[in-house]
Length: 430
Image 1 (cartoon, helix red, strand yellow):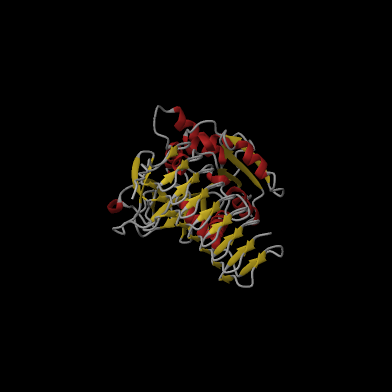
Image 2 (cartoon, rainbow, N blue to C red):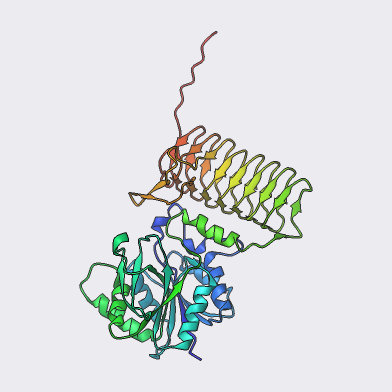
């Protein structure tokens, strides 16, 4: 039986494209942060050692979180600057054993896939531990990623980045689920690439291209779920993956559910949650600990985490709501709320364009399509929206923003801003 690879989890990349949300590896889908739930999956697959690559901003949080996984030997290293995946792997290399035959399994914390991909990769490696294995997602529609050039025997001879729909060499997209049989061989190739005068940050891909010329790389095809947290609305896709794991009605003994409340489908209700008369929870849905769902409120196909107030007649649909959010007589549709958001009475997140086309969003100055025909608002931590605020589809609002009553928000708002509409009150004698 082949030696078990050491897991390398890349969790240090900058999350600037996720604004106004914070560190994606620490986002919680259910009871645990994404990083912890991912590690538990690998632990269940039998992997015993891991190296987590963090950044200076999340290093301490990750060290604290990984202490919960006691059955794995986990080391956390820091990638001090955004120098690409290759540099992240070189940092991880400093925490690996010095022997030349150490196999490694490279993944990204924000790629959520079925266990079947990991099982198939480990099975292939166990059958022939001399080859490198790369997960290849079978994608019929064009995807702007790296496509694998694969021979009829399954050997990979190259990777082409964003070739365009007409120039795809295969229907297999590279997923960062890679097993390398010899870590030192990969590290040496990476060091050679960083020694070159090349301004691009694709050192890892170039190192693999070089290695493919002299060593065997094989594809492991995969057709299951693949959700990657690249942009903030992808939180909704990952949320749906975790919601799909809820089977039946799971209601904590300490929770209160009124006899006149309605619970339909696959629903999780956490400790000390309160579901008041007339409320409806329609699965798949997750209600966190100490959260209140008020009279005649509706939560459907959503995840509402801990210590939230879903007030009277509020509707939360297809949305992710983090801890300590307060909502009252409002509509939260296809939206993502970070922790501590106050969404006052009468507020609504518009989620549908008049022309019914996919909703666009501005990311780092560029307008891109979300690919979603319905998308509400993405709202950052600690933001307060006054009564009767309306947000237009795809709008993002930063952290600690105050939006005055009656404001219609048509564009993104940066962190720590106050936005309001000036009114002229005219009183005349009748």
